[in-house]
Length: 430
Ligand code: LRH
Ligand code: MN
Image (cartoon, rainbow, N blue to C red):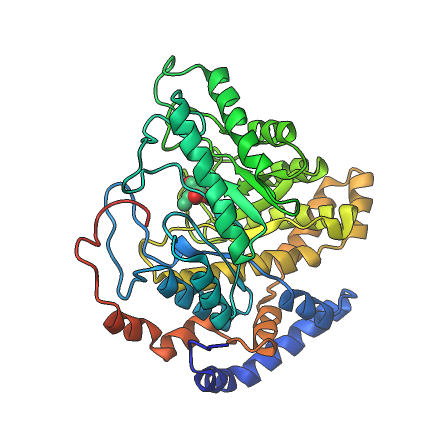
């Protein structure tokens, strides 16, 4: 397996931090032991944690106003995978990539071979019927799976089935379907009719799924439609997934809700009814901002993982939602942002394992709201950074991924190897 960053440099950087990592680890170990918690068990838990990286996240993102190309941007999916391999090599928590088609469309065998060479697997594949590909016969301007035009719907169904075929060749086990279909004006389309057409189309996609696959329905409140979105919320997604069958599950993108929505409760509901398929982790202040996970509201991320820990205790090993990042990086080096984000998601996971659940149940049973809330806060306030650093070092990663990455000079190296494409600074997210 190719190591994109020189392993000797990683070891050298870790050596510089070894005494500090060990001292912080022992100090935290002492604090946790007084609480009856075993830091070694938690470190092993952290080493087993994984979140997928979005292939579209390693390029510089943009907004509808502009996209300011970064240095050494990946020019094709193979270079995207190299950048994803750097993220995994240094964090040891992102062993899979979630690809997006047709953005990543190449020969699937070549793509899988590149993944194997870099030690990367492929998570859920993403279809795209929210933009028109070059040479596409029917435009998705007025919708795709819900379009009035039957030929447009058939084209969108065929594209999703093609994504399943590519995904099978990559070893993926799920298809994520997000459609921007909707309306900008009251009356523009029949609200019920649109959902009926969506279900009719998705039944054909569902029937094309291999037995051991899932289809993840991703809801989103608005954008690009600004009056009505066909799959706007978890309720509609849940109803659609229930209507389609057991292989259909709901995917929660944290940025796809109205401000102040109680997302952890949506997670608890979907888990209770066995329809929680997975996540697109990111953070937001206003809309679908696609900001770095844990950068705006880390307590919400913790509360989501607290519900996941509760569901795992209730439902056992069959409870296995897919964890993926979905972010857009406009002002940072995407590799640094994705490394930090993977660490922040892993942090919320470990903090959720620190919750004293017996005490929580007791306080809940006694209606002792204050102590119940304090029990969660005690876990959230625990700085588990020493556990995360030790887990990375023990797994062969970097004690400090960002400083190690900067010391490697990788960005300078790819900046000279990947000249900026002409017209790279257009608008749009990728
Ligand atoms: C839609 C979305 C979806 C992806 C796209 C890149 O906002 O979250 O998951 O297909 O971003
Ligand atoms: Mn998403």
